[in-house]
Amino acid sequence: MRILVKGAGVAGLTVAWQLYRHGFDVTVQEKAGAVGTGASGFAGGMLAPWCERENAEEPVLSLGRMAADWWEAALPGQVQRRGTLVVAGGRDTGELDRFASRTTGWEWLDEAAIGALEPDLAGRFRKALFFREEAHLDPRRALSGLTAALEEARMRFLFGDSKDKSAFDRIVDCTGAARVGQLPELRGVRGEMLYLETGEINLSRPVRLLHPRHPIYIVPREKNRFMVGATMIETDDAGPVTARSMMELLNAAYALHPAFGEARVAETGAGIRPAYPDNLPRVTALGDTIHVNGFYRHGFLLAPAMAGEVARRLLAEAPQPERLAS
Ligand SMILES: Cc1cc2nc3c(=O)[nH]c(=O)nc-3n(C[C@H](O)[C@H](O)[C@H](O)COP(=O)(O)OP(=O)(O)OC[C@H]3O[C@@H](n4cnc5c(N)ncnc54)[C@H](O)[C@@H]3O)c2cc1C
Image (cartoon, rainbow, N blue to C red; front, side, top):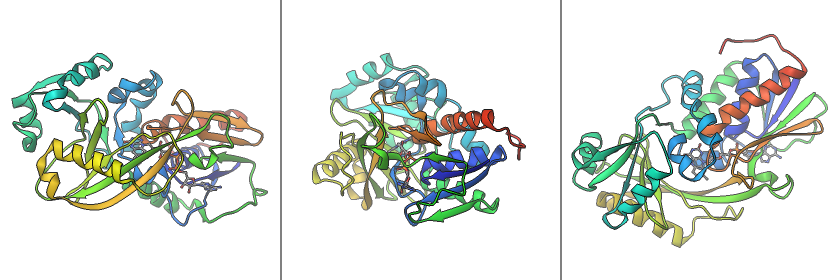
């Protein structure tokens, strides 16, 4: 069966990967000139199903807990399994109790244990929650890694607009927020983020700073970079980061550690998270097209499970010779 996957964000590339592994003849078509230019390129890359459960339905945990293994199998060495640290400033420690009451999979850390885990945060917080099983990856590295592996396997990538679908039996549409207004109930949720660069502080894992109005997280990257995210604004306006959002993100980073005050702002950006009313992704068949959309805050976390679902549906229609194990 010849499949056209539209969109080369995390949804499209994981579907392409999964279908390739099951022996399908796959072509990826991306409207932009490169992969990962949509929401996926702005993501934190946190694989954090236990933390996300604070504000998400149960499938985020049950479907998301296999994500780290999936990414590790696809891209050996890219997944960092170092857990997530959740802290709150002195006046907001009640937020930690609230977070704990809405999640599982954590352990309490005292001041000494926080310092042992993240030496640069020593003495800054009296207590924290530690989600030991969580993981993270660098989204841009992961997307280019999947693309390189697929290109090496001779998968075809077409860049730019293309309307000709006649060469394909089925289309898998993974075009994210571009379908807002076209797919029933799909909406955009804007997420603004920035990259800070400083050699004055080291973190080994994502750190979430709770706050009643502006909770943020910081995800360490290579080369002294830190991704700071993210706003949650109900709009599909993808324009540049606003001054207000920038101030909120920077204030919160400074509250986590004053060394961020001297950091360089290396990049700012905004991605539109596609979301359905329940904030869970859906695989929906409409005519000869399967839509895989609505990943909201959980593209890297839930795309592997949804890619598996797409593969199961297509295999039920037309079993293919399995190309590779796993
Ligand atoms: C700031 C921020 C932080 C986030 N952090 C995390 C996180 O830590 N962990 C996590 O799991 N998730 C996170 N997310 C959520 C995640 O990024 C999204 O859920 C995910 O990127 C959605 O992926 P997608 O492939 O559906 O959409 P996109 O990444 O937007 O990809 C859609 C692609 O389709 C292309 N396209 C559009 N129209 C067409 C067309 N007609 N033909 C062909 N191609 C087309 C676009 O150019 C784009 O490349 C975050 C999101 C944001 C914004």
